[in-house]
Image 1 (cartoon, helix red, strand yellow):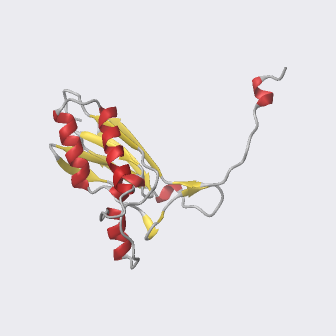
Image 2 (cartoon, one colour):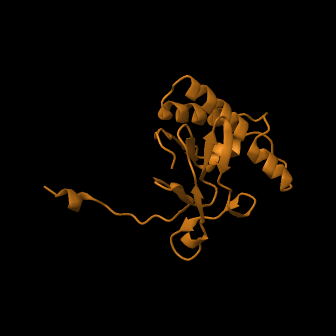
Length: 175
């Protein structure tokens, strides 16, 4: 019988990825972001911060990659954002902002927090709406607007990875 270690097969796969690392500290939200993944901070139904997309050209984002072809981690943008109780932090992959405008996201967040929904449920609601818009060929989306601005004839949503993580700031003191 083989040991678990002997039965493992290792494969070297090549690929690339954007990156977003966020930490809540006593100083607030500390983050580094590279590419078109990112995060936003919502306070009282308004966006108080949204990490900018970092790209070389339209739809060609900064990415980490094995080998020398990718961008360096030092190309990431560093942020320090003060947060307060009641703030909602939304970390996401590009499929979210490709398909939903800020107002769409804010509407879901406001409804969810007023209804007392847990962060995971809020994230699922946001991701579900983004997926619906990604599949809609008849709706103007942030991605289609950016494509048109870049000179492409494109309309509708963009099927892409959609990952959403929602956190609520609930501390009794400001950080």
